[in-house]
Length: 136
Image (cartoon, rainbow, N blue to C red; front, side, top):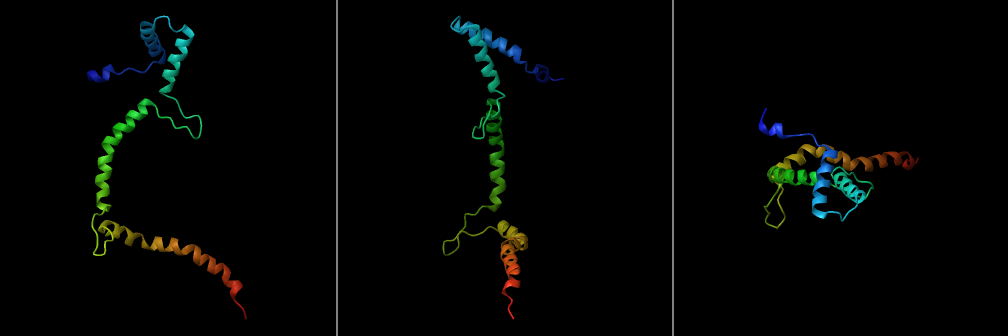
């Protein structure tokens, strides 16, 4: 087993709280009561696993922020590189942006589904009204 794997230990909230208590006591002395210190430590530990409590609240733990930041550094260049095939910097004689070949190919492949979706409601309404519009 590698040295790094041996250094990994399971997080123990009680042990972490005790280490925090010792460090805060060393820094602040008796400025906080034991009860205040305990509440403060629990608030800090809970913040690492806190979940949103309301629909409008969005909370990301510090670990989540770190993961998001690091994944962004890795994924953003890859996503941008993949999208370059669909981006255009070319213009026609009139000044309109030109559609890249990759996008043209997607449009041709999806044309039947696009046309069906566009005409679906209109045709359905005409067919529903047809019996009402037939007069003898």
